[in-house]
Image (cartoon, rainbow, N blue to C red; front, side, top):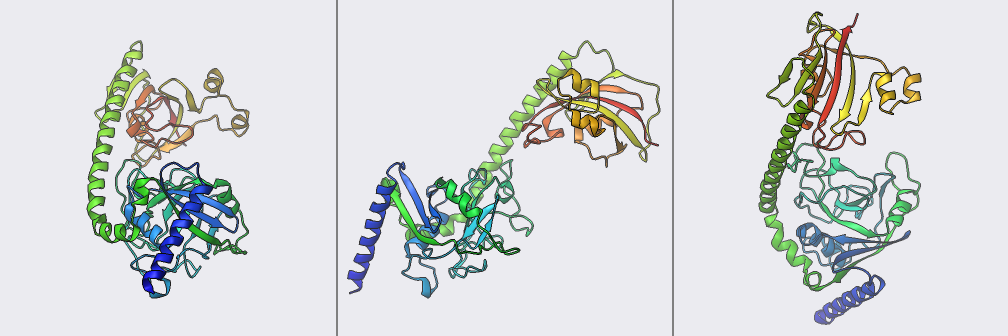
Length: 406
């Protein structure tokens, strides 16, 4: 009797998978999750090759054969009939909680499987919800915006301190390939204040797993979860070492480019005959005017005028109206707001300036003017300051230390 029931269950899975494949015949080889919801259907591609444990967990729950679920969930497709219990427009939608309270779980928790190359870097990323480090269960979310603060690795490829309760590390294990419009529809439903729970349930009517191609068809979720779970820490350590090595190599390459850019800056400005400072930090400056003004005290605040340029000469910010006009960057609203004017900063290390600008300022006396090269790592770093400053952008500033603020 048991054998007949099992055979019937397997047959049902095969029929379901065949039917799903027919509905989505345009999909390439891979493992997919089809979310049939009360708002229409979404399809996510699952990263089963590089995030095998997290995907196996999700697939086994969906197909009702997860080895660790509570007795009440055994033999049942776990996600069918559950809701998206937390919906935040322009952020994410969250589901997979059997209690719809945000605190439910399937009866177990497992470790974070963080893969450096998978990030919350676009709309539609499928990721594990958790209550802290290594607390994954059945809950998941789908992003509706880029959310880098949820990544397990930072922009340098370094594993973040996920044990810190203020640091959010979530394991990405797939992405939507169909139904972004459905994601948008769900994210825009009316919700209760504070809880963000939809006022009208958004139901996952059926969550089907689609296998296309030999590799996906061979993916035995319960077996993979059981066998690969103990290896997460080992793989994480190996990934951490590899990511750190890549990040270090990228830093070396960027540093070499910055050094070359500094050399080119000094050569390009050879006609400027003022005193030069080629700092071991990577900052370089050429005085275009040296005054007989006083050197401010560390307790003083100084008024600064400046213009900042990208390496290609594009002006991105200035306190001088005439410089803005000359470079075709004059903005009437900025002018009317009185923002073409100097700004003040403390003449010490506490100044809220990028490191290279601060270093240059502290070499100057009142009345001094200088042209300054600032390598990216003393500027806005590898991430830049979008949309104004691109990633790893070296900068050039014309700076004048105008006066001591009274």
